[in-house]
Length: 265
Image: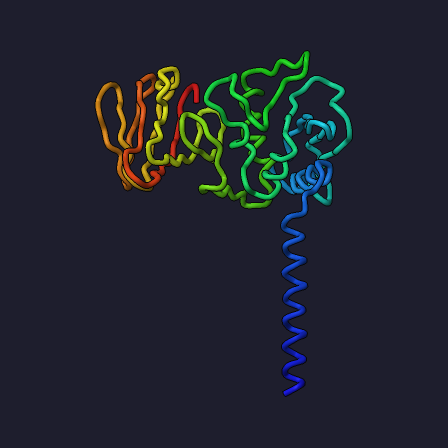
């Protein structure tokens, strides 16, 4: 009996130590340099690293870093070089708040969502700035969004979590960006009760078509002056340059997947 009690005490003690360690690990905040190193190491095994590119990262109050993806294939993976300091040649720079960098690292939000906004002047906790003298072509500029996805999404295949805790707000509701590239933009929206989406006339028409796929609840809307209801299990097509807005009159959140495509997307 004593042996059993002693074993039980040891087991309880071990579990307590494990729980304490697990809690410490989950709340540990890494510094910017440590986090950036993990993304560089991961990108060395990414098939998209075969395309050469140089860019910078700025974390206010922590410094600058330059990443040089050379496009060279090594025995250990693709060559991706990391150096402290601002890029010497004009290029683009990710400016990321420390809290946001940690949130991306912990999988609480993805980089494209952190950059998402309704209007050009909106604040974002992660932004892309062009160094003086850097003037990318339309093609080069269009490659930045897919590059952001691949560099800031670790592992293979790349998985994008979405849900209530992974969102930011724009257009009047909560959203998570899935993937952007020239001609394609995809995102998930969660509209809370009494929220209104695209209520501002400036954002009610887009220069490209879109599909809105309802996956939860019923959202009311107005498309080109016509009242509509979009319920779970249905998809609505919105042509380019057509005014549309949405609102939730129910007592529960509604959800939809947004697919924007075509020229201009």
